[in-house]
Structure formats: C-alpha cells, structure tokens
Amino acid sequence: MEQATHPSAARAVAVWIALLVLTAATWRLAYVDRGAFGFFVGMAIALTKATLVALFFMHLWDQRATQRLVFLVALAFLVILGGLTLADGVARFPPSIERGPPLPVPRR
Amino acid sequence: MGIGARVEEHFQDFAQQAHAARLGMWLFLATESLLFGVLLIGYAFYRSLFPAVFALASRRLDITLGTANTFVLITSSFTVALGLHLLRAGRRALAAAALSITVALAVTFLLVKGFEWANDFREGIYPGTGSPQAPLTAPGAALFYTLYFLMGGLHGLHVMVGAGLLAWLDARTIRGSLTPEYTTPLEVVALYWHLVDIIWIFLYPLLYLVT
Image (tube, rainbow over all chains, first blue to last red; front, side, top):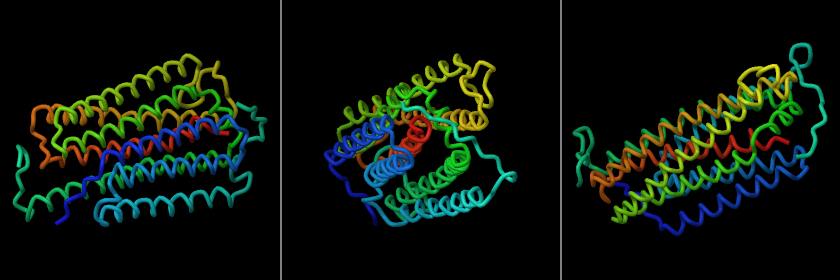
C-alpha cells in the first residue's frame, strides 16, 4: 500500500521562498502601467503559486493519482461553468446587458 | 500505533484507512473549489462588464494590508507543512512550535482583516452601495464591494475554522496523541489549510491589484 514519501524540509523552504518572491513580484507589478497584458501576468503568477502549493505543500507530487484526479475533475467543471458563463456575457449587447462607462483610471 | 490510530473494521489496514481519509478531504476540497470558483466566475463576469469601475473601486482598498496578509498566509502554509514534516521525523516539540506559529499567523491574518474592514466602514465602504459618503458610487462599484466583502468574509470564515482545527491539533501534538506513525488528522487539516491559502492567492490580485 501507499506510504507517502517524506520529502525533505529543504524542499518546503525552497517552495516558501519562491512563493514570497512571486508575491512580491505581483505586488510590484500593480504599480507598473500594464493594462490587459498585466492582468494575464498577474493571473499567471497566481496560477504558478497555486500550483506550487498544490504540488509540494499538498503533496500531489508525491502521492497517488486518485487525489490528483478528484481535484482536476473539480477544476475541469469550473472551466466549463466559467467558460459558458463568460461566453454568455460576451455574446450579449445592450440593452439586454448593462456595461460600465469607460472612465479614466489614474496610475497607482 | 499511538492513541487514535485504531484501524476501523471496514478498512483492511492502516494505510488504506489513511488513504481514504486523504481522499475524503480531497473530495471536500473539490466542493470548496466549486464554492469559491462560482464566486470568482461571478467576479470575472462583472469585471468584464465594468472594467474601469472595478479598477477605481480596487484603488480604495488598502494594498499594504492586503499584501501583508498574503505574506502572512503563505508563511502559515509553509509552517504547517514544516510542522507535519517535523512530526513525521519524530521532532514533537519542534512540530508543536511550528503549529503554534501557524495558529498565531492565522490569528494575525484575522486581526489585520478586521482592522482593514473597520477602516473600510469608516470610509463608507460597505457591501452594496455603501453610505452616501462612499468614495465611489458609479454603477458597478456596489458589485465590486459586495464581492470584496462576500469573498473576503467567506474566506475569513474558513481561516477561523482552520485556526480552530490547527489549535486543537497543536494541543494533540503536545499531548502526544499524534505520533510519527499517526499523522492523518494533521495531514488532512493541513490539506484544508493549503486550499485556504490557494484561495487567498487568487483573491489577492483580483481584489487589491486591479489595473
């Protein structure tokens, strides 16, 4: 039967430092005028951080595939749900949907 | 096996029981992901309709406190992982210390959050349209602030539950009812705690860093 391997504490420290650096990077990025591209960079950093936590702190890297499967299925359903919902928003036009005015957004 | 490590009769052996416990927690975490995921989809939907208002509304939030809390929660995720590692390695006193730090960090997170919300209320930022003195009343601002309080509040509730469970497991570690051979309760609570951390990892840029 499975006995989860016991990875070293050094790995946990390395992941922690990586998470701190990535958090600092997201925070500094918010002060750079970056527009839509910046949003994707911010989300890519968040996804990277979440993946690091899931793989190493939550031991998905070390353990059986069943747990990965459970979590990935939940994420797959979220993608379906979110994709269809957002597609609905994109496909609608006024007056069936209200859109915000284009206001000037000053730099931080 | 230590206290509480009894194999229930419907399991073949200890390893199978531990695996079932872990899988059960993952199933729960899957439903939690859907719960928060639906809120995030709602957020994405309205942000796509009111991009400028969401950016302006986000400016009013305290980016310093939000960032500080991100560091606090990420570090608590690390200390609980370390606590589990130390317990398995037989370093009970150090494991208990790591868990105590985790609980302290969770409480810090909640205190900062409370302080932040008190400031928001003083400025007239509430769920919904806010007070007449609210800094931003454009259409869409109410949606942003409602989601800010709803997602932050639901997440805070999870932090409270996690802090309570971790304090209980800290006491069990000190008492010796968790042993290097029997770490299942700490393992599954640590999984839950890491998910709470992951949720905040997404909430942080979406609430505080909108551009």
